[in-house]
Amino acid sequence: FLIARRGVHVIPKTLFGRPSDEIRRHRRWPFRLRQVLTRELTRRQVGDQRRYGLPVPDHEILTAHPTLSDDIFPRLAAGAIVVKPALTEFDGRCARFADGSNETLDAVIYCTGYSYAYPFFARDFAEALDTTIPLFRRVFPVGVPLSRVEPSLMFVGAATAVGSLFPLAEAQSAWIAEYLSGRYSLPSEAAMRADVRKQYALTRRTYSAARPSVDLRDAREIGRASCRERG
Image 1 (cartoon, one colour):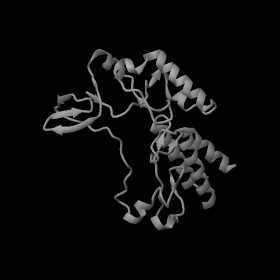
Image 2 (cartoon, one colour):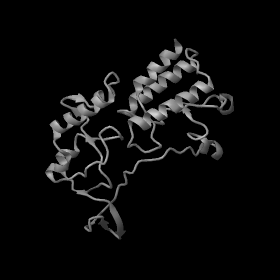
Image 3 (tube, helix red, strand yellow):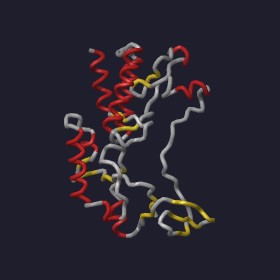
Image 4 (tube, one colour):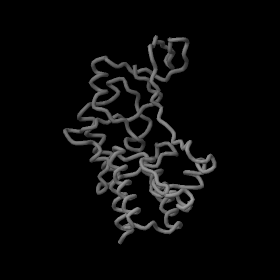
C-alpha cells in the first residue's frame, strides 16, 4: 500500500528519454515555461495521475518539491501497489484510514522527510543555525568567525536541490575547494546576509507551496555566482 496524506506531483525521472530535471533546472527558460513543459510532457507520457488512484495535488506543478519515479505508475496500473488515504490509527497490526477502511499490515515504512540536526555542535550554536546564523548559499555560516570552529566550518548538501542533490553537492564542494585554495574570497558579511534574504524571498515566490523551511538551490547557480564574485 502507498499511504498518501496529500496529493503531490509525480514526475518520471526521464521524459521521452531525457532526464526530467533538465527541464526543471533550465534557467534560461522562464519558470512558467518550465512548469508547462514538465506538466504537459508528464501528462503525455503517463497520463492523468488520478487514473492511477493518486490524490490530486493542491498546488501547481514545481511550486513544491515533486516526487520522482519511473516505477510507481506501472506498479499502480498493475495493481501491485494500492493507494490509501491518510492513516488515522493503529490497533495492533490493523491500520485504519481516513476513508474508514482498514488493512492488516506486516510493516510500516515512514517516508515523512527529515529535519537537519547537528548533535555534534554545542546546543546554542546548533539551534542558532538557520535562524540567527544563516548559511550563505547553504555552505558558509554568516557572522561566525572561522577561527571559532577551527579549522573552518562549511556545509555540503544541507539544502533542497532543484533536481538531484548530487550535482549541488559537487558544485558546493568545488566552491569550498576554491575558497580553501585561496582562489575565492567570501563577500562581506552584509553582502552575504543580503544574498540570504534575496534567495529566501526567491524560493518563497517561486516555490510557493514548499514548506517554509525549504531553501531550494540549483547547482549551476552556485558556480555562476562564485564566478561573478571572482570577477
